[in-house]
Length: 151
Image (cartoon, rainbow, N blue to C red; front, side, top):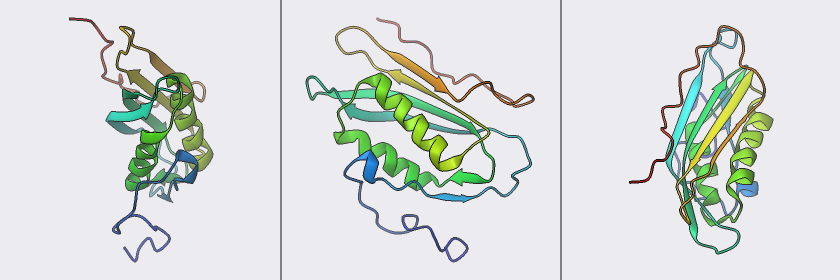
């Protein structure tokens, strides 16, 4: 821990933030900022609330980014994503807000987020957002989430 004295959540009890605005995304230095590589986070049990009914909505999120000088600390990312649990927003707004907040915090070379939302009312909604074209030479695997197909 002493190697990263500025981290306030890792290795300590940290309550779930009351809202995404109150969540603190912490960063650590990229050990090789000149290297072009992809970092992937997958959150298959993401939850938020429907802004119309207040009922829970569920999604499988896949976040890919090519870092510059900063990496997101994973516990802070988990807490940030968990803070949406009691937040009411549409799928589109929620997915884009997560991507934009990460870009603001990390200033990556490139970032994309895929929000694969489970159906409510019989219709799944998949939301995709990215900062632009991926850097040339970046290995970009498929996000690995198949589109929803009814039974």
